Each structure stands twice: as C-alpha cells, then as structure tokens.
Amino acid sequence: MLLEKSTLSSGGSGAAGAFLSPKICSNSSYTSFVNTAFNFSVKFYKENFSSTIRQNGILRILKSEKDKIKCKNPPKEIENVKFLKQNEIEFINKEIAPFGGYFFRDGAIIDSKKIIQNLTKDIEVKENSFAKKIKYQDEIYEICSYKAKGVIVCTGSDIDFKELEYINLKKTYGHRIDIKTDAKLPFHLHKNYSVSSSKNDTLHIGATHIPKYRYSEKEIKKELEKMIKEVSSYIDLKNFTIEKIHFGARSCSFDFFPVVGRVIDHKKTLKKYPYIKKGSKVPSSKYIYHNNLYIHTAHGARGFVLAPYTAWMIVEHIKNDTSLSEDISTERIFLRFARGKQLTIY
Ligand SMILES: Cc1cc2nc3c(=O)[nH]c(=O)nc-3n(C[C@H](O)[C@H](O)[C@H](O)COP(=O)(O)OP(=O)(O)OC[C@H]3O[C@@H](n4cnc5c(N)ncnc54)[C@H](O)[C@@H]3O)c2cc1C
Image (cartoon, rainbow, N blue to C red; front, side, top):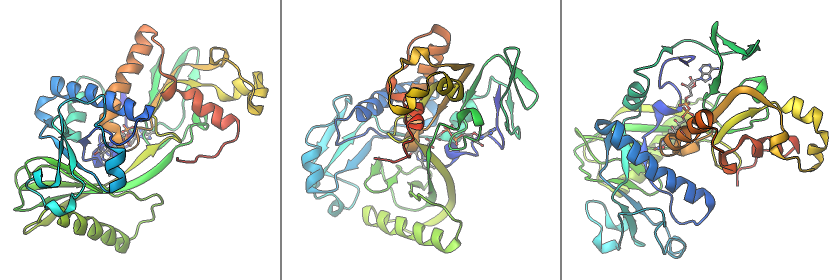
C-alpha cells in the first residue's frame, strides 16, 4: 500500500524531465555508481515500460578546455558512446560546442507521470493520506489508521518524522518547462540545461537549480528567461510558446549518494554507545534499529536514473537479507549526525 499526502506525482517526480543521462568527467565512486545505475535503469524502463521511454540518445557538450582534459576518456561503465568534434555535430548551433561532446546512444527521456501510474497500478494507493506520525506497537506500525508489519519511508525531500531527525538532507528547487516550437531536434542535448528531442512540436527544457526558494513571480520570470536565452543559443527556438511550467524539489545528502536502508534508532544507539559522538568506532551490527522500518530517498537530481537500481537493492535486502552498499547506508548519515557535523555539500 502506498500512502501519499497529496496526489501521485505531486512531488519532485512530477516535475522532472526526466532525462536519463550518464555522469561524465570524473572517476569517483559516485560516478561509477550513477553509471551502473544508468545501465540498470535504462534496461528496467525498456523491459517494463517501453512505451514511456524515448531513447534518442543524448549529446553531452563539453564546456571548457579543462573539461576536455578531464573528460579525455568516456565513462568506463557506459557502452555505445562516441566522441564528436565540433565540426561533426549536427542539428544544433556548432558554436556552443568548441570542445566537442560525447554522444551516448542509450541516453533517454521518460514520461515520469506515466511510469508512476504504471508502477502503482497493481497496488492500493491512498491519496490525501498525510503520514504525520509513525506509531509502533506490538510489532505493528499504524499510520493514518492503516496497519502494517513494515514501512518504507520514501517521502522525497520532506522527512518530518522524529525517528528520522538524523537524516539531514538539502533541498534544491527547480523549474522545468515544456514549449511548443517549430524547432526540430532528433536527440536529447545537455550543456548547462537539458533539452529533449522534439515530439509533437514539443521540447522539454530543464532544469533550474534554486538553493533557497522564496516565491516571487519576478524571480521566476527572470530565471525562466535566462534558461530560454541560453537554450536559444543551442538551437533556434522558432515561434515558441511556453505550454507548461513544472516546479519541484530535489533532496540531496552531503555526499550525493542516496539514503537507502534500515532506519537506525539513533536515540537508543547513542544512549547505549555514547562514545560514538567522540569518534569511537562501534560496528554497525551493534547499532539498534527500528524493526522493519526502512528509508529510500535522497536521489538528488538523478532520481529516475538511480531509484530503479536502489529500489531493487532494498527489495533484495528485505526479501533475501542481502547486504546494502555502505555508500548508500543510513549508518554514514547517522555517524555525521552523532559527531555533530553540519550538512555541507562538497
Ligand atoms: C525540476 C526537476 C528536474 C529534475 N530532472 C531530473 C532528470 O532529468 N532526471 C532525473 O533522473 N531526475 C530528475 N530530477 C530528480 C528527480 O525528480 C527526483 O530525484 C525524484 O523524483 C525523487 O523521487 P522521490 O520519490 O524520492 O520523491 P518525490 O517525487 O518528491 O515523492 C515523494 C512523495 O512523498 C509525498 N509525501 C511527502 N511527505 C509525506 C507524508 N508525510 N505522508 C504522505 N506522503 C508524503 C509527497 O507528496 C511526494 O509525492 C529532477 C527534479 C526536479 C525538481
């Protein structure tokens, strides 16, 4: 059963593009994680929701000489990739790509709302059900008068439960727009903004990044004008009209990895091992956990790339007791909280 405080897709997922694009120009463990998830998720959407994925490939434009050196090699996890020099790039204004770009044939965009409808069609969805408290008694959870043996919290950027106060996430808001235009683009494109391939005279453009949001019509107008001005330098947006403006929040952990796994009872754990606060190492197997309470969130700006992969991981963990990668664990978040570190995004 899925409890949703508003309506399906009313959170960040409804606002997203949603572009499926690999991460480039870095050899970090996060890059490797994103790209492994990219391969998993593209396959997942194609096998399960083929009518909702548009796999026209994505061209990632390199932005500077520094980028060109950093991005000398394409990501090692990704196949079907070709480097294009400036003079080999077609359909867009070549001047925006003096350093060339990588064309990823598997890059895609998906219809996020349709995917969510399909994903939830065989389960009970209770809209307008605001989970305010997680009540637990006699091994049963009770939320909004529904009872269950286990709960997975996937409330995106809103984590308002006292059990989860140690999960400190940063919100970044953003807009995406759909425009009607005569401009034609046969593939998806990304430089500072992403532009989808054209379908039914429509292009999806996104997304802006606003760290601190205060509603102001003037600010929104300025922000959208900036986005359109830049995208107009990529392609000639002939006779365009803005059809729809989407808005949502992304939630992000301090190291960008999602937060997926069992929820630690931080109060009981710190009471039993107070020296964790001073930096002593206590194996996580000794931590105290809430029974059958899990979390799946903080997918940042890449939820549609990462979440099928992490959802598969957590299902395997719950059903078959497989171990979860430390990179996405609740333990790393708990330790930061216990040692009083502030949320700083690297
Ligand atoms: C403008 C924008 C563009 C983006 N573009 C891309 C992209 O191109 N590609 C990509 O992969 N990702 C993109 N993302 C990121 C992606 O949308 C998110 O990572 C993903 O949607 C997060 O999904 P979620 O299910 O964790 O959160 P959400 O989609 O926010 O879902 C959480 C849901 O929980 C509900 N909820 C919250 N609290 C409660 C409660 N107490 N009780 C009941 N229900 C509750 C909310 O109403 C919401 O519907 C973008 C995000 C934004 C904002």
